[in-house]
Image (cartoon, rainbow, N blue to C red; front, side, top):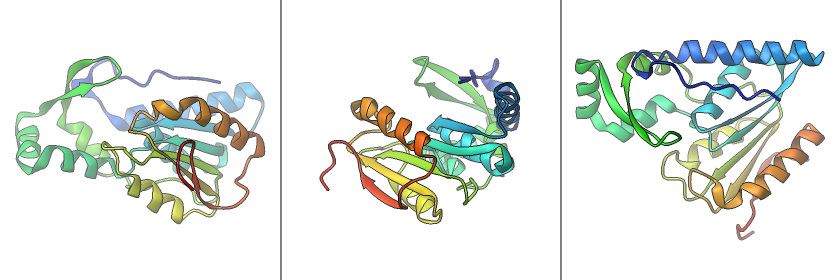
Length: 201
C-alpha cells in the first residue's frame, strides 16, 4: 500500500493538475512494484475526487475504487461555499483563505486552483470499475445526493449510507471492514444502496 502526501509545498501556487499527475504516477509505480497490471485506489473527500479522476484517465491500471465522502462536482462546491461575491474577490485578488482541517490552520489558495478544477468533469470515473462509495447522511460539506447520482449511473458501484458527517468518524471501524471485504470480493454482489452501520433499514 502506498499513501502519498498530496499536500503541495505552496498552497498559493497549488495546481490540481500537478497533484493528479502525482496520483497517476504513484498508481503506475504501485502496479510496477507489485507486478500486477492494476491496483485499488482509495481516497477521501477531495482525495476521493482525485482517485476517480485518476481512474477515468488510466482505467487500465485500476482494479477498483474505495471512495469515502468523495467531493464530486468540486468546482460547484467551491462556488456554493463561497458565493458569487467571494468568488469575484478570489479572482481579482488572486488568492483567498481556506481552513486546512487536517493541519488545523488557515492557508491561502491561488485562484488558478479553481480554474483548473473547473475544467474537470464533475462526476469522473470509469463506469466499468468496481467502486465502493461511503457517504454520511449528515454530511454538510459534500451533499450525499452527489454520491447517489454518481453511483446510480455505474452498474459496478455500491453506495453505503451511514449516519455520519463528512469525517465518517463514527463509523470508521465498520467502514474499514466493509472496504476490506469489498476489495477481497472485487465486485459488489449487486449494485444499489446499502444502509450502513447504525442506519435504519
